[in-house]
Amino acid sequence: MELVSTSRHDPSQLATMACVYAAIQLVGMSLYGVETWCDRADAFGVVFGFYGRIPALYVGGGELRTRPWLGGVPGITVTAGTVGLLCTMIGTTSFDGFSQGPTWLSLVPHLQDLFQNLGLSIGHALQAAETLGLVVVVLVVGGLYRLGIVGMRSVGGTSGPAGLAGRFAHSLVPISLAYVIAHYVSSLLYQGQAMAYLVSDPLGDGHDYFGTADRGIDYFIQATGIWYIQVAALVLGHAAGLVLAHDRALALYRKARDAARSQYWMLAIMVGFTSLGLWLLSASSQ
Image (cartoon, rainbow, N blue to C red; front, side, top):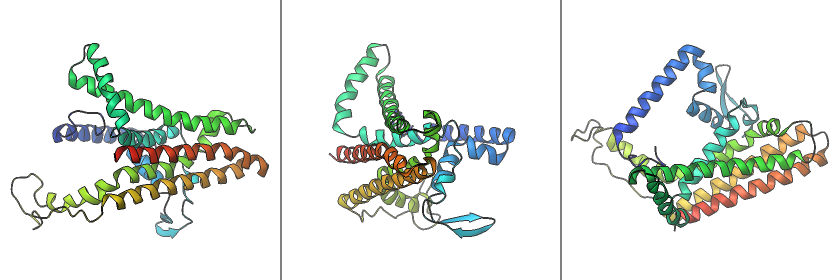
């Protein structure tokens, strides 16, 4: 809806989709149970559950406890869709930056013409072009991760590529969060302030329920400051992913030498992801 739809600014469509999604969740919970459905089928619940394992504070046994940073991430439950979900999270935010850069802006008109020649209207042709770009970027991210897994598999071990991909899937969690922070921190810092006047006049009909309807947005951080936050998030996220992958390799391989050799591949993939993220940031800011 955000990245592809030409009607992204129509509140009614988003409201309809939110209601349909909520209805699906209620039906799923009634059939399979609340916890089971939220832990395995609600994409937003699963992703935020992953992110919730990163901090040092967590709730266990009904009380607030502490653990090392990233300490809860290795314990995520990996299912058939975990790797795909994380690659999609990274890929969609990557496309968000890529779609604002000159490379995509020069390419999308040609794709739009292609789909128009196939009989689509102008709006639908643009949506088809954007959808194609989104899918390709997600596949590229998944392909990079798969390349690292195949490389690690060449070092040795008993797990096949699919099993190895699942064992290292948790290393993608901090990377996914880093991409989310990098691409949405400006919206959070600036547009998040709009909550002050929106809660006072939610329907835009002149009300001022909380006395904040006249509030504005304070652009207290310049573009350079936002850029530093984005770069720091990307670098820290990829470093955290590499730490988690190295820790898992030490537990998986019998020889420390094999564990280190396997991580040469993961190191190359993390450098590739970092370079991709920095390129997307620079491209979107041009």
